[in-house]
Image (cartoon, rainbow, N blue to C red; front, side, top):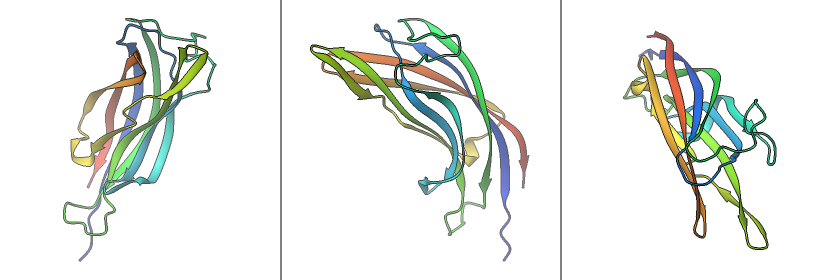
Length: 165
């Protein structure tokens, strides 16, 4: 029996960061949009960076080094991906999904120096069947060291460009 594949071509855009906390944030590291195996998100078929900042470097093309409480930055960084689906009963595990994957860090000033802390969450999954039209995804990122908390929200837009199958 021949397998029928469906495919969606999508644009994933990092639209903005909004500082939702009370402290300035300066996230460094990366955020990528990935086409991954639905049953094993470690198996990546395609990937593109939406955000990539080195420690101590500006977090925005405007030269901004940090984002103050209540403020926002617009990015409009887009990657195009293809996501495939072979059907709900596909037993080989080749169905794919969108994964917004991040490895973000924050330096938090503490007595005697700084502490490097990871932001969570690091994964936002969107199954093939949920990729319809244009959708907004807001991901609240948070890191904490002792009583110091840094929070911001990343806003993404996912648009289906074409769909077949």
